Image 1 (cartoon, protein in one colour):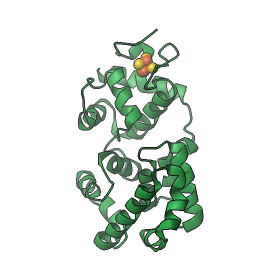
Image 2 (cartoon, rainbow, N blue to C red):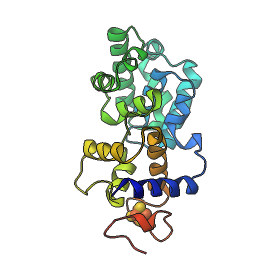
Image 3 (cartoon, rainbow, N blue to C red):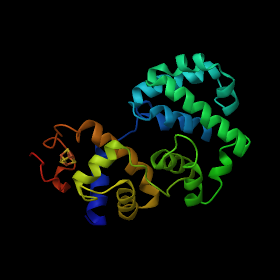
Image 4 (cartoon, protein in one colour):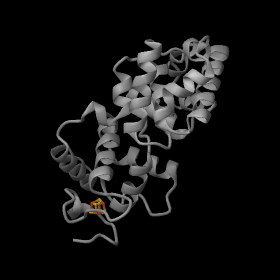
Length: 228
Ligand code: SF4
């Protein structure tokens, strides 16, 4: 796949999904506060669950704690924290994870996550990935949403869609797909690339039975099992 085709795909996706609805993306909702810790908590709540469920949990958390800080998380009794974030699922493990993250950020960064984000992007990414529950995707979400165009987080939709479209081969792993997308698109497009391809995956390029006939980028897609 070359850059020209990638740009055509992006253009078609812009037309198809004219506006992003904040409610469809927990990260967009959480970033409204410009608070990195709040975004981190939102992304952890969204791991292995739908944005709809994690949004409910995140709203509960905001309503209960008002201002989501590491101190407020650790001061909240664990049973109460579990109850608050229940809509996100696996709430016992998740509540425990939120406390471990909060403790570590207090101990290592005086509770201020922005200290990591002030580092150069690659260093910030490495530091973020040392935190409990923070893998490459979570670190990339924080960097993309808070530092701008340095990386593209690859969620399950993007992973599937990127392989089918032909941005990367079918055996490519997270880092390979991320690298291909970074090369194919311009840094100022990374956020759009991330969001628009997720929307494509949700609406058309579903895991089972992709809706190729209705897909707005079918003419560019290299998927061998494309049904037109
Ligand atoms: S044509 Fe089909 S496989 Fe290709 S991106 Fe669209 S829905 Fe996915």
